[in-house]
Amino acid sequence: MLIPWQLILVGLALGLIPPRLFYGSGYRHGTLLDATTSAHLRTSGDSGSGRKRRQWWKLPFFWIDPIRGYFSAKCLAMAVLRMPTDTSEQTAAILLVTCLSTLAILVVQMEFGRQRKGSLMSPATFLFGYMAAICAGVDIMGWGVAIIGLTTTIAGRNFTAGYVVAAVTSAVMGVHYLGATNYTVGVYALIAMAPVPYAFLRKARLVIPIRG
Picture 1 (cartoon, one colour):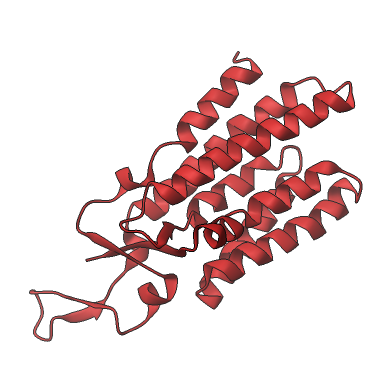
Picture 2 (cartoon, rainbow, N blue to C red):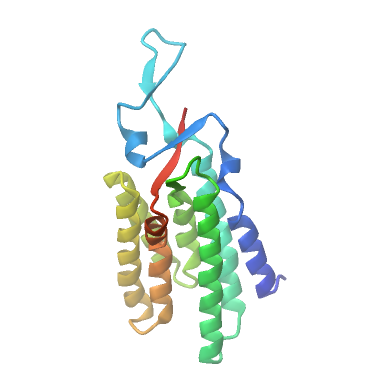
């Protein structure tokens, strides 16, 4: 059986894989609005008109990332559950490890997938799987936050709105399931919204790969 620190390393190994490895060089980057508007079409030589929508969601990247995010967070969550929490110092140390590990993972996901300056890869699908698993012991909360956040993102075609709603949902559900004084409520909310302040500080827009 793996000990907590080994589980953390496995979780980091899964999370620190650059997203660029999951799609080829024939893709460009655009916002979610770009990917879902009729103005962004691709030419097909197999049909007469040669016009049809870019089906961005068919890219394997969008199906691999949630699975990778889920198992990355699952390993971290299992490690947290196995760590001793007899004192407040131990609890604080566990929260710090969780935050630092998650920050490192999200930075890699956002930085190592972009094509040019001024843009960052939006880790929406990765974070969907990540949030579903990181809420150790309250899986219903994790899945709730993930589903509501992703639904808002797709419905509004805006990544920032999805992350903010996910953070608010995380805070509300966290207070309900864990209590208002539980430190992890704030940690979950920060994780859900982390891409927004990071992109703001980097003065970059959040993008996803689209067929070129």
